[in-house]
Amino acid sequence: MPDPTSDGFFEQVKELRERSKEVPDDYFVVLVGDMITEEALPTYQARINGLEIFRDQTGVDDTPWSIWGRGWSAEENRHGDLFNRYFYLSGRVDVKQIKKTTHYLIRSGMDIGSGINPYLFNIYTSFQERATFISHGNTARLAKKYGDENLALICGTIAADEKRHEIAYTEIVGKLFELDPSDTVIAFAEMMRKKIVMPAHLMYDGQDERLFDHFTGVASRLGVYTARDYMGVYTHLVAKWNVEKLTGLSSEGREAQDYVCGLVKKMKRLERGMAKAEVAPGIPFSWLCGREV
Image (tube, rainbow, N blue to C red):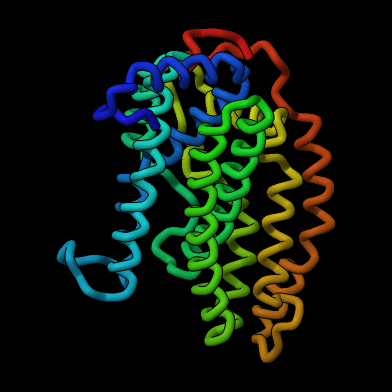
């Protein structure tokens, strides 16, 4: 980002604004939606501390999970900060409407279907972090295509953080499969029956009651995150955790294993259905001063 302490700050800002002019509006819709998701960080930190066995009771607990949770939050906080500065300087978006959407989202909270169950929570985060890595990776690719190398670097750097987070959570669940395979595969099946919803699914800007659907529709249309990606994350996790090869399961565990391993075919049908349901062009976004995308 432009360095405000440098003599060339205003020239750097001018260059940033010139580069951003070449980036289309639909891309900005996706990038703004991604940033708002990152900016709801207080909700996620509260959610982590709502899990009793992970709770940072004093705020400075030295348990491994407390140290991880605070470190994770610190890294995620940088993502929203970086996007915020880019949007503010680019002049391409209505920053006030974006901040309003973030306000509503934090106030609304989120319901990811995991309750206080740590098995469900870690399976959810394994899925969600990989999905976020894919999304930011694709926005980096598109930014480069549109000629904004700096924006590509921003998105790529954030994607690298998300990848490391994904590795951590999938390793945690991998250990759960090793120590308690039946309950873990049961939790996996339960989470997939509920379907993985993204943490910003309660997104609202004060105007559009279907804002999250419209945002995800544009993301799908651009190829940033699609039904195929959703299926790809799922099949990756099934393979990563060797779910098909689990042995010594309880009867309920075997039933869950069959469900998890048989879901890929069903998800292929879901992919076709979601492709048909993509949002058509012509949706106005308050984030873009009401311009239609």
